[in-house]
Image 1 (cartoon, rainbow, N blue to C red):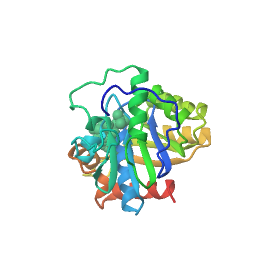
Image 2: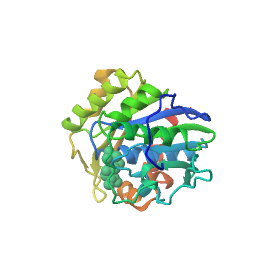
Image 3: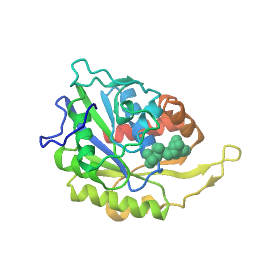
Image 4: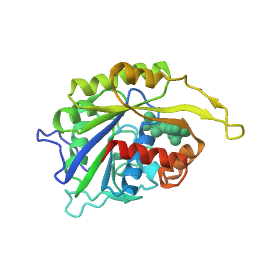
Amino acid sequence: VGGHPKPQQEKMNPPGVKSMIAVGSGKGGVGKSTVASNLAVALARAGKKVGLLDADIHGPSQPRMFGVSKRPASPDGKTIIPLQAHGVTLMSIGFMLPEDKAVVWRGPMLMGALQQMLMQVEWGEQDVLIIDLPPGTGDVQLSLGQKSELTGGIVVSTPQDVALLDARKALDAFDTLKVPVLGLIENMSMYVCPECGHEAHIFGHGGASAEAEKLGLPLLAQLPIDLETRVAGDSGAPVALGDGVMSRAYAQLADRLVK
Ligand code: ADP
């Protein structure tokens, strides 16, 4: 994303992309990027052609989660060739900036960057493009919702009340933008002691399932606090690449979302 991105008016649906699923959350740190990366990997393992756009412009996590950080090629100085990792086609603002460099941009520049990452990147043919949104309900959500035809949105939340309160806003934003809500994912829903099997509900219990029921939305998954998930995310090889419980949970989620 070179130069000074400028906002443009045209539709933001990359030509070869069949469906676009946005992953949002009310607040940061609830595992939105973890879910987005693992969902993308699980879809790829299920034989889908998958792209992942890291639209979390202020805090891009996908370069670390996929263990890639080189600058994408741009042979003609205009089109951008996305990177490939673990079977997923990837683009992140993090590829274009040093990791410790903050993005201090106003709305229009954000919109320009988003536009470029969708329309100047050669996504090619993809069954699904997963979009890792920034937390909350800001310019990126608004712009995407207005200018792209999204197949649907997912909201990730912890069971905690505060996260849920914010999750409701994220759901409401999808509604306002007329993006179909595919469901809620409760992350860090419990901790199972590896020694004794005891289940501890560290961030509360049942919050997201109650909320999903109240809103008539599917609860797409309840994912435990899991050491392997965290370590895998930090090491650049998402847990869904393995063959354990979490990998199976993400395979199920992928299956529920994309037939
Ligand atoms: P967000 O995108 O919502 O800001 P991240 O996906 O970056 O959140 O997750 C925040 C931190 O929590 C990361 O270190 C990640 O590895 C960890 N994490 C996310 N989900 C889980 C989980 N289910 N179990 C353990 N750690 C998790």
